[in-house]
Image 1: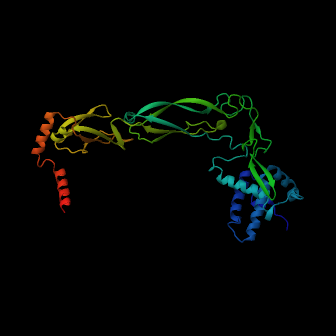
Image 2: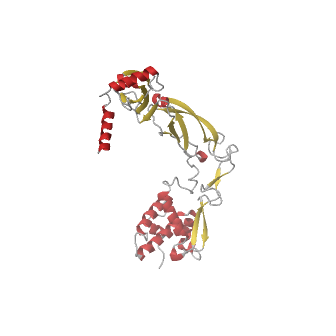
Length: 376
């Protein structure tokens, strides 16, 4: 049976451009793909026909030959090969479809005139340690970041000034080369141009053709009030410069907060443990503690305070990020038992002990329970 005209197979006009060809092929290939039509030999045959038509027309040289001589241009060795008719043209056509669908998702399309010549630069990480006071107040800090910046000599192109790019002779600008291995045709990234389709006529002597060079950059970083340990700050486009004029990556600053001598932090709240004398806990009193805003806060100790009790100081904690609110400060009172008593102090405590009958209800109740357990 005579072959149908390739333009008729794809349903496009003879003067259609590459985009129209690819769009038509993509639609038909999806429609007749064997996976979507299991057990349908007609669909499989149409799929092969569509693939052959597209493989011929998408190649400028093959298309020119076909437009002039028709199917006769590919007779005597120009037909399809491989097992079950899935030859080089099938591999090529499907690779174009997958490249078209997934190319942007995977970070940019390769070949076809240098789609990978503008590779995005790498993201960078910088670890920044600040004090709790700096987290409370917020500040602007300057950091030195070793990175790759755009080469000023070649303006990021990678080419020596006065020169440019030329089509790679190995792949003829496609960015990919093919090699037959038995029944299969393997398509690989061109080893000469690394898939760009173009090569430098002469590389820049200052950057070696990369379009970027190593440099230390000084950047200002705004630390917001209330920032927490482990927070990540992103500085867009402050990472490494891209290869040969490609877009830069981002800089990520990871914040860690130094341990404080007095305060422990939990979110927006602060905690401090303060030892007080036994007499202060028993009789009551007050004392002052410093706060991170530079003032002092008065802590009142109620008479009969027990070890571990907490006093809450409202709004004396950390700023809550992106608000005008503050957390609280909790002061835990640790009652200290006196040591190195003088003779007179011991006498007074012994006298106090003899007079104590209902001053320690918790401990008295506990030991009463123990006595009952021993007597049982």
